Amino acid sequence: MDTRVQYALMILFGGLCLLAAVAPLAELTQVALVGTLFGFTAGLWVSHLVGIVHNAVKEKNANVAKS
Image (cartoon, rainbow, N blue to C red; front, side, top):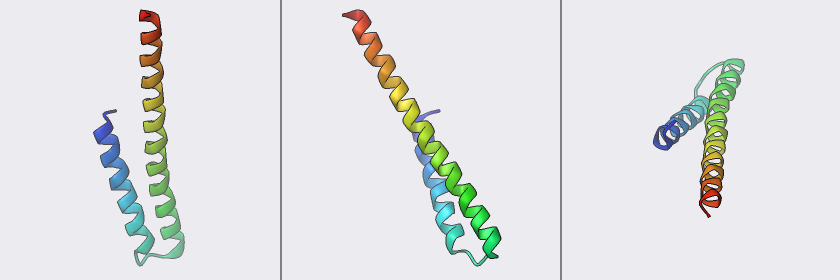
């Protein structure tokens, strides 16, 4: 997934998470909604970090193979 798309989705879900945290909803609904949105945000963040590390390792291995 493109980095810009990941950043945009992280900002979107993070913002929705903050909005849900202050929304006048029933407590159980609010907790479920905030937890779900935070899970999406954290999942995207972890996926982004794994992708960055994976690309760095591939680039390093390619440079070592050329040497």
